[in-house]
Length: 305
Image 1 (cartoon, rainbow, N blue to C red):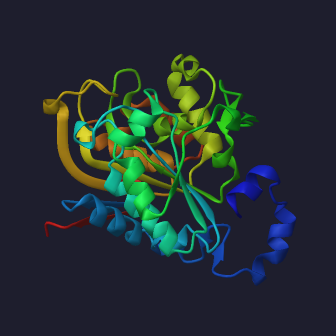
Image 2 (cartoon, rainbow, N blue to C red):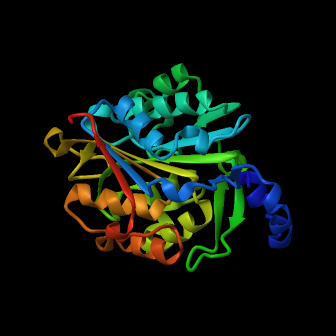
């Protein structure tokens, strides 16, 4: 099922079952042999580009997620007027490699955007993402106030509806690419937190009961692919005030379909456990992925080997 068709119309179970025997190997974004693929791929000790490509390949390749003619939204963290070395935004090389892989897989268009907290122009420029993503072939744009749509969250507990950026609702595939970093309120910024960049309005309001609100948001958005950039991680004073000594080279990329599972592994980079972040536990309850890492099939690869 294409993402935008699911959001707009849905499909009846009966119709789906009647067509089952005629479907190709790739159905509704799922492969019939998916059981042989890992839940997560974790790649270490390479360059941002080579680790990103390898991590996606271990999940079956970008062609498993992107179909020819798709419109893909790549959502990095471009929230802060900081350079890549400061660990506040997604690494631009990770973003550009994802864009390239989407186009290689046949995407018709790849859109890259975020709703920054600082000046959008300065964030896009100083993060290096505007330049790298544009050169890779993406359509890089600023988030426009007129582009939001009030959207109901049927599964939401506290967050029943919110304005969501329309291009994220209308795309065929949303790829979520957060940077792993400390956050003074949410404790960490990972995949679920990164989805706030698709929200309009006064996002500060969801900081009350933030864990449940993040779970409510992720329970509706559900990216088709999540890629955590942990090449550099910000260990203190996040999300944006980190000093050079707060930045650590973890040289890790984590990929997976299920956002709670990917975030669960991301906590381990900071010496934490998945249960240390309530939003991840709530994500598990929402069916957004297993968070007991011992129950997951994890494929690991190191370029240092």
